[in-house]
Length: 179
Image (cartoon, rainbow, N blue to C red; front, side, top):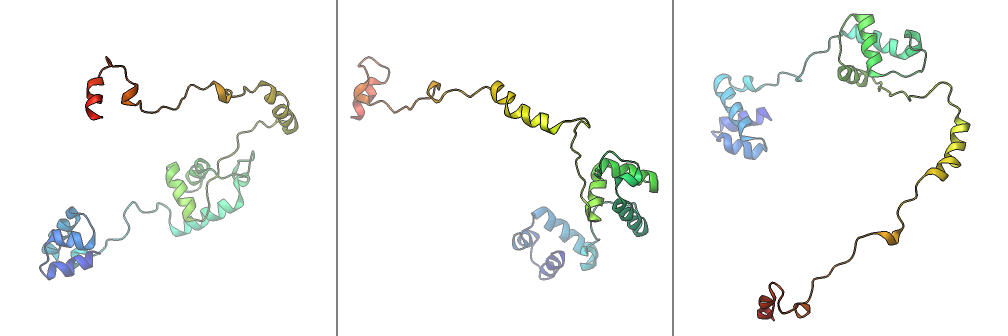
């Protein structure tokens, strides 16, 4: 898009018109015009993706992918087989001595083809049959039923006819003029 803008600037098209044609903000078009005037088309060349570079080398990324393939239990998390982003942050810190944020670890996992999981927080002694029986019997008895349909306060309204208004009601004389 910047190259197209440079071509238009070479044809002496004003930045406002460049913005309209390329469907960009006028601020961007004016910035591009300034860059083009100062350094030509080379000044408008892309500088690559924005953002910070990855803190792990390609070799370390390959190792991290191998560690993730081994599973959480191989690295000390035996309670479940779930890679959470916070666990990956800890793993990266332990293995590579590099600090990542949770959101950064999430993006890194996606880049490697993994997705962070949220573990189900369940008590180890949970009895699923007792829970199911309680839901069927006790919850059905305890649960409040909603209001009966007939006990609502909503009502349909319609605009009153001017003929229905008492003669001394506010606006009654105006209603008579409209008839």
